[in-house]
Amino acid sequence: MKNYTHINDIDDINSWIKEAKALKKNPLKDIELGKNKTLGLLFFNSSLRTRLSTQKAALNLGMNPIVMNVSGDAWGIEFLDGTVMNGNTAEHIKEAAQVVSQYCDVIAVRAFPTLIEKDKDESELVLSSFVKYASVPIINMESATGHPLQGFTDAITISENATKKKPKVVLSWAPHIKALPHAVGNSFVQTMQKMDVEFVITNPEGYNLNPEITKDTPIYHNQKEALKDADFVYTKNWSSYDDYGKILKTDSDWMITNEKIGNAKFMHCLPVRRNLVVEDAVLDGENSLVIEQANNRTFAAQLVLKKILENG
Ligand SMILES: NCCC[C@H](NC(=O)CCC(=O)O)C(=O)O
Ligand SMILES: NC(=O)OP(=O)(O)O
Image (tube, rainbow, N blue to C red):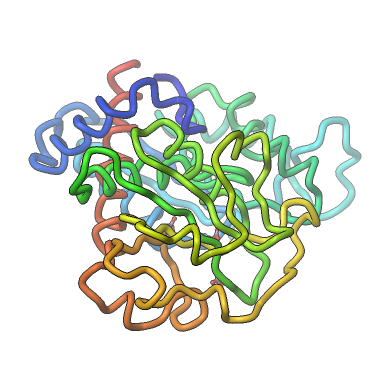
């Protein structure tokens, strides 16, 4: 595998899950594989899990991680071609990506969407520019439209916790006060579409994700109906896709409660705002998988890095 930028870079989800579970059992078995190799992690946005678990994954493979908060600490990077750079950007991605490629054997990038310029976000301007101009493999640590390390993690976590052959998995929108990206929702949808699960989405009207991503996955506007007989409830807020980046609804009637989810396992990528997205009782209860999900981020990233290292 050259780059890991999208869930479609997973060629066989079931064998990947199996391999990740094996790494989890014996995380240091490939400690020689990444010896003397450098992983550069570039963050245009905040992170706790991705920042630490991806470094941990690199360390488990014997790699040396180096990290930079690009926004703020680096020079402002220009991504558009032919610009007269007389504004706030001081260097072009053409130079920046080539320079970083000389220091790193693999580059991982986090770059959230604007949630204002839909075309720019959908073109994945930042991530695709790194892919275009870097001379080393690129890993997506959450881009404008996808979070494939999270999606793969969620597949591992569902596989570990399923008690039946074909569990029912519900992706439920929940309220938030900020306009949040679609990336986690998109990658979760794309992951579930690859798995042998009964998968439905529930969100208020006006909040349907990109139909080119949801495809024929059923979408319910009635949360209660969707949650019926669920085995896993995956919760996430996202802003409107149709009315791009807008918040149309904030009332608490879509918040996840124990009463709503019954015996289903609860999942969220984190960070999560308590008693806004989900009530305390769910997160503190025995059906919450959020901490184990965060743990699995290490092994998802480790398998991705391992496949990239083995390729080159
Ligand atoms: N990487 C996991 C989620 C990151 C981001 N969440 C956030 O920005 C939450 C911020 C807050 O709650 O203030 C998102 O939704 O894509
Ligand atoms: N789930 C996740 O990506 O968390 P961070 O934003 O903290 O990295």
